[in-house]
Image (tube, rainbow, N blue to C red; front, side):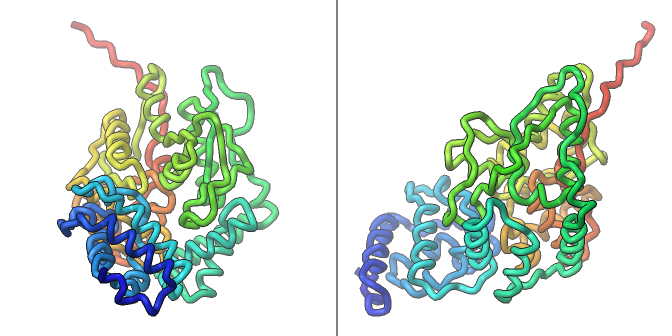
Length: 394
């Protein structure tokens, strides 16, 4: 088999694993559907199709030196669309494991971010954004959006002061009649932005929802790319504010539901609450780790209830990867650029269900000098008292 070509450079265990991978991929006929369906496809030099081709050719070194391994967001689309039923996502996951153990420590932001996150999560329950950023810079990765990074650093530093730490995240006082309480998993990013964290609770309260948040829930594990397990478990359904958390919790058997879907549904059933939007139209962005069809449909439901227009182009534009963990270090992606251009053409803001996506798109807009606002769901949608219908005399 061609895999033997690199036998001398790698341990026999690596050669044997590549043989197994080649056997699993032998029926691949290089149609390219995996790469064309990948949310990061526009950004990749090799992509799933070419990586499989290199496996079949026995090019171990070329595979293990490709940073495209780490630009995979683990969304699983490549496996879902493969016409030959190859578990491409599993192949890529096993290749990342081999690269960790036998590769040359690829110097790309996604690989470094996963390593930094793994180290942090072995010592503490959540990622600390400030320390994470410092560690990334110490390893040679600097944010492309220096203005945004400085603003974030100043905000976090301000929140670390005594007055900043004392501000509660939730809504105090007795719950109004009719309020329901939902178990809420906030993840890592949201609690570190005190203003946004508090806004989520306030917006939920407007819909008659009190969020019962577990303070010591711990990270979902996603930033470590599979090296640190999810540090949260629950036998009951939990509501989340992050698509990556949804995906990670689902892998451990926790039923996770986007909070925004629950708020939209609650408004739809209520005779006293309306869903209101900040503008007359918006461009949706659901991210690459969401259940994308369902997430886009949910935003469509919110738009319909609020009586605003959701501007949709070709569907995959609205889930093309924003850059994920490497976005702030690599800069704007082609998908982000096209999405922002569409929003500029429509004179509409972008609305997303993910904080990380919001921040990456903010940075992309600054880098590309495209004047488009980017809103996190609760920054755009709110509850309002239902206006009684006007009486008319027949």
